[in-house]
Image 1 (tube, rainbow, N blue to C red):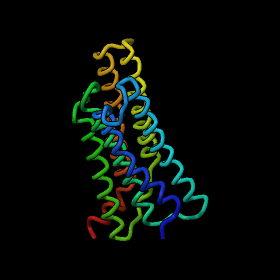
Image 2: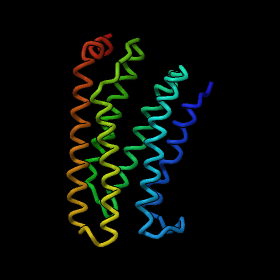
Image 3: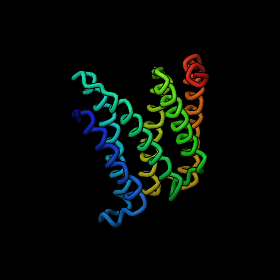
Length: 196
């Protein structure tokens, strides 16, 4: 049975494709380039709000389900990987290694979780994973905010790209480190699942 939390999660999955569409094709939506970063900030804020709200409402109403446990991290991964892949193009021009670091990290951890679940072991979430999500969200917002002074001629393109790369590189590095933390902390369960 679908809960309210599930609808918020699905909404996040459905709205995030607007992010690259508006970044690349803002004119299609009748937007000027000066309005583009504000609309992107709004979309990202809505996505982050629904991410917080669906978990909150699921716990408050005691509607935590197996479907939600799968959908919520999947929606988070889709959202953040989409944002950073978008940033590899246009004015930001991040190297592809950044979103690939996020994507590979999520795929690898998801595979481990699935494997352990099939063997009857539930891998607990780590604080480092929550910090990873916060860092990625904050970096995304900062990069979008930096576009605004660039649009107004107050920031050079080189500075925008350099700062964006440093921030995104930090987020990618922490994401990889959080994966090692996750693996090490759950190493006994992972070993049992692999050996079983």
